[in-house]
Amino acid sequence: MFTGIIQYVGTVRAVRTIGKGRRITVGVGPLADGLGLGDSVAVDGACLTACKIDGSVADFDVAAETVSRTTLAGVRVGTKVNLERSLRVGDGLDGHLVQGHVDGTGELRRIDRGADQWTVEFSVPASLADEMVEKGSVAVSGVSLTITAIAAGRFSVALIPTTWTETIFADMSVGSKVNIETDVIGKYIRRYVKQMSGGSGLVGGLTMEKLRDAGFM
Image (cartoon, rainbow, N blue to C red; front, side, top):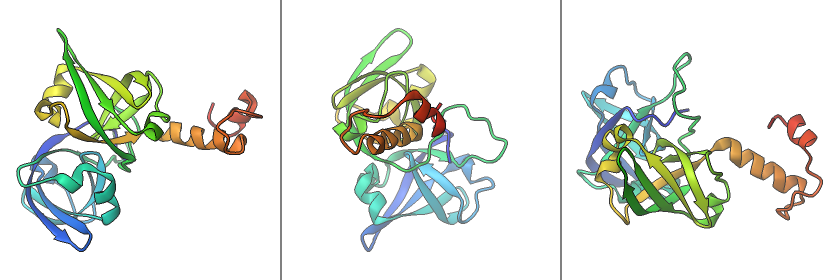
C-alpha cells in the first residue's frame, strides 16, 4: 500500500527482456537505505518487488501483465521514474490509499500554467473516467492528485509547484503517457451498484440504507 507522495525521482539504468516480462534496474538514491529484498516500491505507480540491491541501485522484475497495462513497457535507459516505498504501520497518510495496481494508461493532452499552479488534462479510456468523480482522488504515474474536472474520456488535475518540480511531471509534455490508478473506494462502489442493478448500470433498488449496510457510508 502507498500514499501517492513521491519520495524520489529515479533513473532507469538498464532494461532486460525476460520472457514476456522485463527486468529494470533503477537508481533509487536514498530509498536504498533500509530497502531489502522482497520489499515493495511503487515505480511510476506500479507496485514492484526489489529482487536485487546493489548500493543505491535496485532491480525490479516486471511481469507480463504489468508490462501490458503500464507505461513500463516503454521505459529505456535514462527514463526518469517516480518512486515511493510502501507504507509502514504508523506512517502518515498524506495523499490517499494507493494500491500500486495500475488500471491502465492515459495521455497528457494539455498543460496550462498559471501564477501558482499547473492545470493538466489527461485523456483516458471511458471505463476509467467512469470511476472518477470531481474532487475525488486519482494516482497519475504514482502521484496522488485531486480531480478538478471530469468529462467523457478525460479529466484535469491541478499541480502545485512542489509536485511539478519534485516528480517526473517537470519532464512531461503533450503526448506523454502516464499510469492511472483510480480510487479503490470508487471501484468497489461502482461494482456494488452494478450488482444491485443487475449489471444494467441503473441504480434500480439501490438505496442509501443499502450503501450504509455495505459499509460505503
